[in-house]
Length: 143
Image (cartoon, rainbow, N blue to C red; front, side):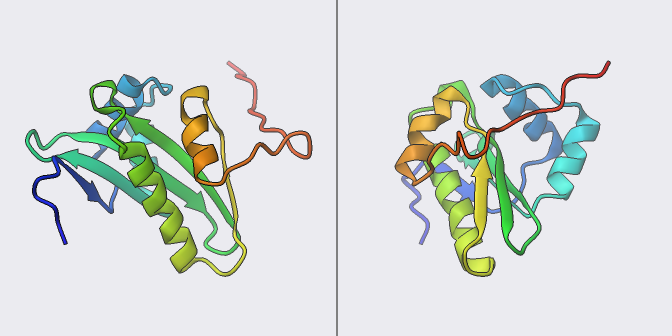
């Protein structure tokens, strides 16, 4: 049932490309081009965003990359600064995790790269640091 008093609505799809680009940039994630955003929007295993009902603006998002079998990676968890501290990140993350629980075979391996602002939320939802067994790494810029 939809709570019309709630100014936010979880939408179980990707935001449009322009909203994706804006959400990443304005929430402090690394900026991406429209071309990169198009691939992200089209090729995620699961995606959700939150729309602010009064303005119609997409204000939060997150997605899952994965093979559908055992490996799932949470990415692009972002909330616009003016809408933070409203539980929107938690709402998105809980929905994404529920999708994994409902649609994936038993015992999926679920990972994420945790920037400092998101760590308390991730810990509250059961994530633990994987170091020293494994350590997140990125490929160095080769330009």
